[in-house]
Image (tube, rainbow, N blue to C red):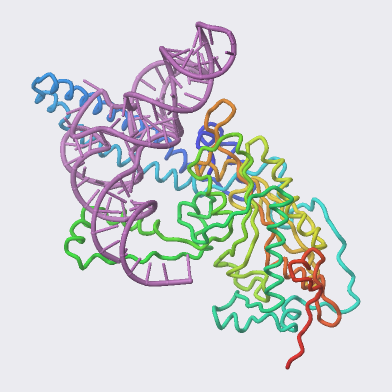
Length: 456
RNA sequence: GGAGAGAUGGCCGAGUGGUCGAAGGCGCUCCCCUGCUAAGGGAGUAUAGGCUCAAAAGGCUUAUCGAGGGUUCGAAUCCCUCUCUCUCCGCCA
């Protein structure tokens, strides 16, 4: 969420910056709502002040045993006026809030301007793609030929975009997650966390998935007893507006996390942490769930795009002055994993058009996939500045002792499934085996190669 | 799932309709006193808004006592709904 003060004082600049990322700010609507808000708020507060003053007067008079009927007559119609003003103000503020929650973050000055992902800028490359002396297979063929990857059965169990791994492949998957966690906790100073995989709407609003990207999420409705058949309940239900109770019902639902960024970042929601406790660096290995609505036909083969995938997430909550430095460091932490695994990759600075909703600046890390003969995203590292912190009311006590919004960053370190894909494809051999990167071998009980087991 | 008890500031805790953003204590900050230490005295110490001001300072003002709604001129206090926490019973990895 952007600072509404900024919209009031420097709207022109905000509109210009948002246009860079292809977002058209509803200027007229905002201005008229804002003007309305101002009038209504002033009037409401005046009425409230009057009510408070008169009530105080009544209290005074009563304590002295004086007659208050004269004063009471004075407030006769104040109540209605006030109620009306309050209701209209609330409506206007809700409308403003609605607009505010839909506005993406402003791009940082260092972000390349662009119209599509084609305008992303390569920052650096690491490693050299291996030259194969045979025709490479993709991870699906490799995994299936090993007898360790089974999409038809996964489809039987759940449907499209799920996968089933067994044996050495399942273990390799687990080894990867362990290896990543160990590296980040032991070498990069992150604290490991175990987090809920189901979160409430408030948390998702905090990190920016709600309200705008609801259709990307898996929603778990809370079972509620229908109280309509209980006459006692039904009666009390009528006292509430139906719109309100509907709203509450929605808000009560839980959602499967699309990324551990949500639970990790929301740890500081509604908190004011001590300045000395920054930076807070957290990592967690979790499954992630995405409905992938709107990606029909994209990456339908294999485990690149799944409804459920594992990821080791990195989150940092930092002092505002340190956030861009932290973004470089965090990206480096994710890169380190690929380096240790000896997987070639490149780092892309996303252009204004390709960045996520909450980010001011994002680096994507793309790993080399021989079968696709291209680099594919395996991590996305973003600085959100105060955008999420403002939604979450996540603050720290600054040097002057005043609460100030902190900056939040997140990045994958890394997507486990895609890393597995990269290993299968980059380390395949001519016999259909896959050698296991050195750093993973201790996690595999010393195993150095996946091979097809002889059928008995 | 059943029965009960709760939710107040950084923490503890008082407050059952009026001047309460909230007593008292602890903690913290500053000042005073005291060779040092210990003890003592004083002052301060929530957050988010709005209006005003060129800005800062300041001034005026609103909201917030788990959340939402209601009653009332007036709600931390009364009523309703929900959420969460704790205790006991049952069930369970």
